[in-house]
Image (spheres, one colour):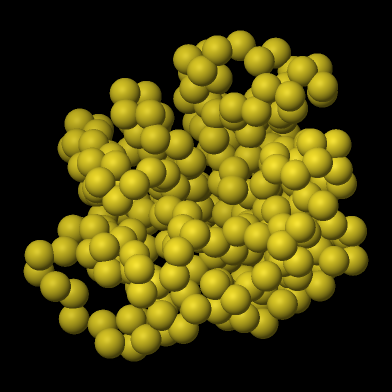
Length: 270
């Protein structure tokens, strides 16, 4: 039973995802990590959308996002798959919609479109994209989201299901409005206090645009065990907990498994 004091978006069961960061690893190691993640019981396996490592050797091994997601869609059977998150600037919105729709079919309806405005300047400059400003990148994301939705509706064959949209970012004046208008999942960052505040800002934007805030699943990343932060996060309505690991860490899933166990115990008691 849901506590009447919980926010409206807390009626959902808790889910757990893991981002297998495709840096400092061979593809064979990544493939084995995907199998291990699915066997661990996670709900979603994420990658990222960067062309270079973000930690460790900046010129170390790294793999492209969407070619890898297509391979993972063929490899896996149960988990949902997504980028955390796609950089909107790297692909034409119509092309991105077609790529995601194709992975939707490969996976049998298990893809999520995770998307954000983009931020890593080296990706842009090395691959010939205009970096612009934070404002121009957010404006481009706002232009792209309805175009992606329209393309989903025009494709033949159509997606196997309404493809969920996850938007990552926490800008209170622009990004969270886009979340209220377009997202099924919001992935936020920050301290417990910052997350609680931004959840309220998102709720205000939902009221502004006429959206039920309960329609938007709340997601965040953690680097701590459930004994330390789970009660606070779930109490404020966070319902998708994501962990991360990479080749340098040997794709260690021990903390992820702790959260899967906590998820199962929490959901069994609801």
